[in-house]
Length: 636
Image (tube, rainbow, N blue to C red):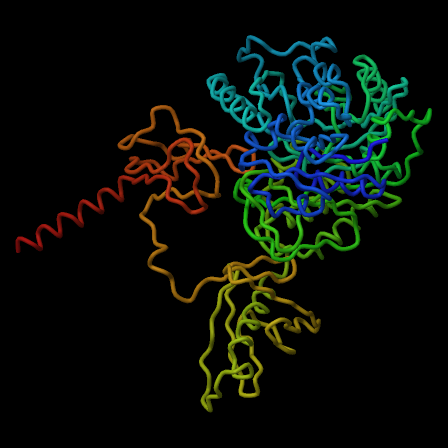
């Protein structure tokens, strides 16, 4: 029997495995990088071992350090979680060679399936080798890992070489393996997968289907089980192919076989030889704990001949610290308050934690289960709308809008092109922003009013103007301590205090609880409102054409031959930043001349850091005219 488990992972992944271990009476060991010294998974474990450094390559991807940590902490088993080393056969062997039990598939099965190229070869599927224009579009894909990293769509043959280089660099950084391959890109198919679980006695379960079609940057955003609207005959085919793939490699443990369904046909994508991020929807539908089953199988226990019967429907939304309207830019910073009511939440964060720059931007998986799909979606929307998320910008509003969209709700066009078609319409703030701005303004005014320590003035007050989240609020303090709202119109103030404001709009009274943490952002319900300062700071002014870092990260490379004095075109890629395990392209804001370049490969930059300056012809001519005028003034 296993007594102590080290989880070779971090964040939500580690916390999820720890939860099951506690329920089974198994002690837990965490590993943590310097950037994760105060992280929730390090706090929750019975024992925690430091891995010196911050980047994945020097910490969580160092199998030798992880094995040493397990031995030092007295663990007798290692659970790889999902991501990092979870599909690394060499790591699995190192664990067993050290006398530890491996909670995962045999290394031989990992080698056969974890590399997407070898998995396809095993199943008789050849990757593209000599790509021609007739093959386009194609997908460049990392042979190892997953999560959308190391993937690039190529629509022009001239882009292929750069895509291969970028995907390889990203894969090397994320997984320690830079191998990539090319396959045909199926436009707007459904991403459907099958959960498998096998023991060492020849039993293989197929635990239904999952639909994971709503994706951004090839990374899943919303998942559900079972896959809705899938023809029974096609579902049965997926079960048979998945079980056959597991048996072909002598698979043991939990795994997932993924397909792209288009035109009624299922195209094999890959087999993930690990637990998947979206496994909770399967757990909810089948009423089982996949981590507990993984541990039981690793201890040698046989599975029952048949899996439990499915019940109802489950939907999962991945809550990310990111800005969908800004090309999904990841966000970092302190999570002042965090909580989601009434549903299952798998997370690696708690109120007061900081979202770091080094790792994935996912804050939590929010999961709802109900007898029907419609009920599960309604429960999930309700929970997300009432979630308290005070800190960095998130994709919460996008998740709610996606779940309510008719294409998703009616399973009308459920495919990987969902966000490509609908992002502009979905990435909009929730309704009620103007009234949330009123509440923010009046809460601030209440803190500063005479009723809370200021002096009374027996004169008519001037109108006050504030702006929050682009919404202008105009109000007037009254002699009785109250407020009159002048804009937006139709708002009556019932009461106003620093932490609670009651407003009546069209006869309906609503309560608001504004919260501010001194960061220039006010949180009012689902609204995250940036406050416009009354007076601008001259130090914040930047030169025209300044290219600022959209996020904190590391400069991984510059465009080939880029140098000061070069002529650049609007939209031309100038450099690439790596943040939260993803590469982000930074382009020229306008056509002009590169007059300054402050970035170099390896440089760590903070959000807002000046990377480069591109001066347009108009700016150059204006500066020349100013310089000429100044010379004429001096000679006059």
